[in-house]
Each structure stands twice: as structure tokens, then as C-alpha cells.
Image 1 (cartoon, helix red, strand yellow):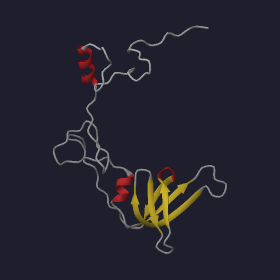
Image 2 (cartoon, one colour; image 1 turned 180 degrees about the vertical axis):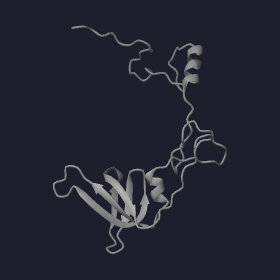
Image 3 (cartoon, helix red, strand yellow; image 1 turned 90 degrees about the vertical axis):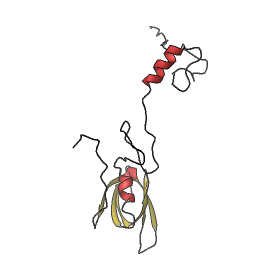
Image 4 (spheres, helix red, strand yellow; image 1 turned 90 degrees about the horizontal axis):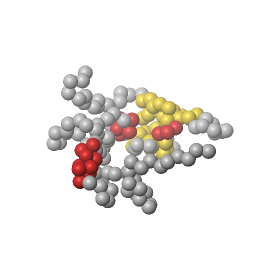
Length: 151
């Protein structure tokens, strides 16, 4: 049986919290030149906005918000419309597929809330089970702007 030698590229600490250097907290005793190299290698990230995810690396002017197109954002633009949500559920002996129809109350990253106007019942549906969604009327949609030079 062969023995493997541990990787010694990073300083080892007793509890492991300094195993991987970062620009914010360089390992204790690391030369200043090495710390500067690590800081230069860190990617510059654009902060996320509550309304959606920003595209990393895109230049942003003050007041400009660039969003990626996500289902949750499209659904939020269409609150109050009647939609039909088709879902499937794995390993369910009673029903493996179900259709929900109702007024779109709101949507989040992992869920949709519908209300049935006839019964007053509300449904909290998980996005992970959603196959597709239909609407009887035109959907509001704002396409995200493309970077300069991209068609």
C-alpha cells in the first residue's frame, strides 16, 4: 500500500481555516509580495441587486442595472394574470403530474404563489417541480440589454 504525501503548497494550520489564502485574510507570515499577487488574482465581482443577478464583468454606469433573464423576474412582471403551471413529482404513487391554474400572486427564486379565485385557495408551488407555464394572454417581458458589440 502506498502512502500519499499531503499537498504542501499552502501553509498548514491546526484547524484548517488558513489553508486557502484570500485577499482579505492572507495567511499569517506570508511575504508581502505574495499577498499582493493573491490580491491581483482575485476576480472583481459586481454586487448583486435585490431585483436580480447582475452580469459579472460588465461595465456599469451609475444608475444602470443589468439583469439576467430569470423565470422569477418574468413572472413578477406578470403579477395578477391567470397562468397555468404544469408540474411533475417524482416517486409519488398517487399522482406524478399535476396542473395548477390561478392568478399569479408573486414568484421568488424557488417558488410561485397562485390563488384560485373560485375557491379562494392559495398554492405555494416549488420551481423545482415546474415543467412549464402557460398564459392565455400576452406576457410582459423586458429583454436584458446585450453588451456593447454583441448582436
